[in-house]
Image (tube, rainbow, N blue to C red; front, side, top):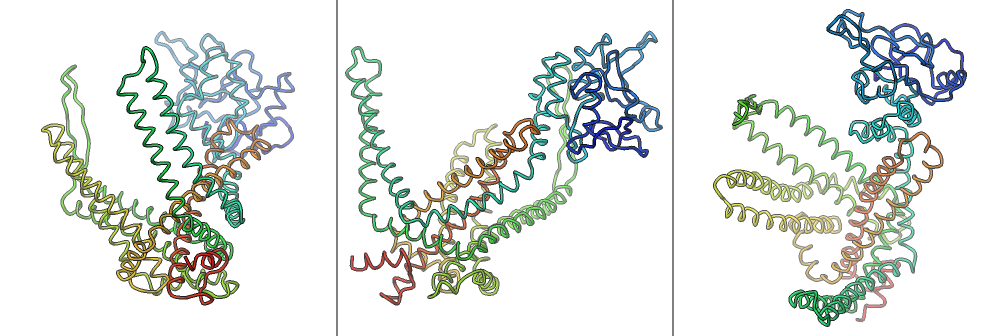
Length: 609
């Protein structure tokens, strides 16, 4: 039962805070009967079980049959059926048409088969067995051992398998998550953050990052080549079979596929050879960015603040959206069913033109605001890394650099952020309008064709999607240029475009290398956090859980979410470091450069190339 507050106990027992017995409230001064009372009572009766399947808790009080182990005077249940507002409350004892009485909870006065009775109804009825439970947010949830005990005692296969019921499944998932909430949040957030710092430290190790990056490149080339070898091997074997089990067309396609794989592997190897310097530069940018983040750890607050702002805006947007949706006129349409003389009534809202325009305006506001918040975070990260890079003595940088960068962005560059996010919002808004037109075309096309119109709209959507990705990429680089030189958006976007053209090899190498390193980092942080949390939950609270799967899965999801936020920041830092290095290389020579560490070594090694 869900309305559990107080019960009266007549048995003196040792206090326990682990779980309570499912009972109801009688609105009088009572004391709580904890699970130790029930267990001790059963033990005194010669039974150490934690469920009495011959005792039910109902709205009319305890309902028992012969063989019940629990003393009916131990707890009191208020007789709801006698109150003024509950004259029709259900009871296990009902009257039959001939004036007799019938027990709808214990058919034939036996607990065997009671699980499927009308009163218990597989856990969804108005009565339930007296059993050990655990209080979860003012709801009593039956423990796993009590559930198993009930299944054994009633000898009903439905009881042993009732976890398959959707409601019960989600109920147990919710219970396990609540029970393991401390492990989930401590390790899902705190553990993931700690391991993220460890991963950043690993990236600064001299040999490890080189081994990972070059190993992945050679592995990619090798896998493609091996795939081509096996395809050619199978094509040759199939062609030599007598009789052949595959057609000539299949054999030729497989052989051509092998040649394609060989060609791709060869091209990849040439790219690796020609871009070896750029790959080393990408590795150096990753190391320098990890050094900057460890030097200024408060930069990690940026994605959290960004996420809080996004959540706050979405909550406000949903509230306004609900109010706007309620402004429509309620209509009902009746559709006749051609058989059985039946009809179906469908209810819907109809909106006037003003309300529709307001809705579209809210959609545009949603796009613009979300893009603005994301772009603001990118600009702040770019400003922090740029200030760190162009500081001669890196020891002078620290958390104060983060604060000063935030102030600079808010004071000088909000217009740049707003204009860049406006461009993206316009493109997304046009795509939303095309999506609406596309749905209308599909609806009309189901009746009178319209295939050509749908194809044209799909082409427009595809082109706009590609254009949006290009603008998003250009915007990010424009924000970095603004952070470095302080120029307005249009000038920064132009500079970023030409910078990309001049350094296509470097940017491509950095994109590939950083993408792979960040992907490995997300998996490493999520997996390591989940393994640690799993081990500790198994050691400490496994007996309190129905299944450890749900808490473990939630830890992985939270850890991946945090790792994704953390490494997205890291990706923006790598791109900013690269552009700072390019600007440094173009504006300064030799000892005047701001580059340090691996970047300085790269310049000294390749300055005459």
